[in-house]
Length: 53
Image (cartoon, rainbow, N blue to C red; front, side):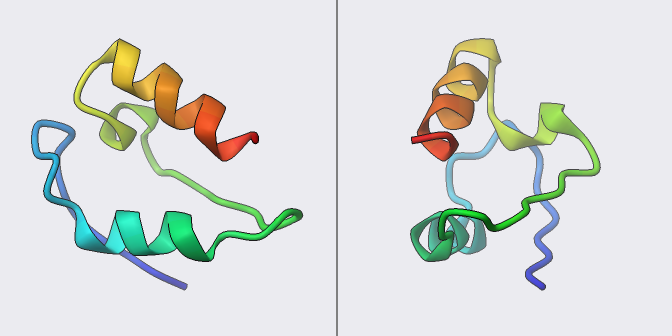
């Protein structure tokens, strides 16, 4: 389990970047708030699409 506390206003999220590189097909990723995943709606959609590739 990886936990990182950050706001969506910062792009400097080292644990998030590392986690995305380590995710494998079939892994489950749980957010306590989708709004914390990105800085804005467009970035959030991009992140979502990247996770589903």
